[in-house]
Image 1 (tube, rainbow, N blue to C red):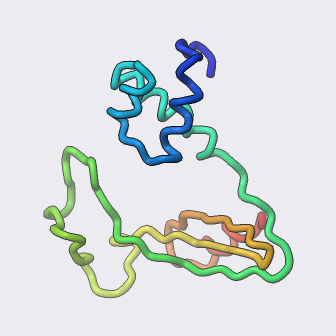
Image 2 (image 1 turned 90 degrees about the vertical axis):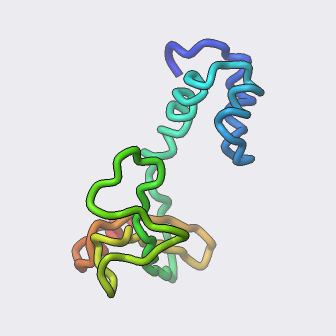
Image 3 (image 1 turned 45 degrees about the horizontal axis):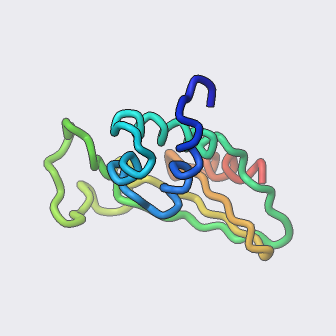
Amino acid sequence: MARLQKREAWLSYARAPLYRISLRKTAKRANVQLETSFRWRHRFLAPAKNKHPPLLSGIVEADETLILKSAKGSRKLVGRAPRRRGGKPKKTGTSPDDYDIVLIARDRHKVTTDHILYDFEGGSFDAALAPL
C-alpha cells in the first residue's frame, strides 16, 4: 500500500469487489479517477493471488473442472474466429488447448482449495495436491 494516496477512500474501495460493483461505479463512489480505480483494483487484489492454499485434513475429495478458454477483453483475437454465445471448442474431447483445467479439492471440514492445471498429466495433479 506504499505510495497510495487518499487513505480515506481505501475502505469503501476495498468493499466494492465483494458486492461486484463495476469499476466506473467504484471510482465514482470513492471519488477517484477511473485510471486510479483500475490501478487500485490490481493493487488490492494482488495479495489474494499469492495466498497459500489452506491445509486439508481427513477425507479429501478432489475433482477437475474444464472451463472453455476465453479471450474476453482481448483486443486481438489470435488463432481462432470469435465464438458467439458460448460456442464450441475447436476439437472434440478435452484438449488442453481449448480448456482451462481447474482442480478443486475439499475436505469434510468444508475447507476448499483450487489450482489451475496446465495439462492432464498425472504429475500436474500430484504437484497440485502435494502441499495439501
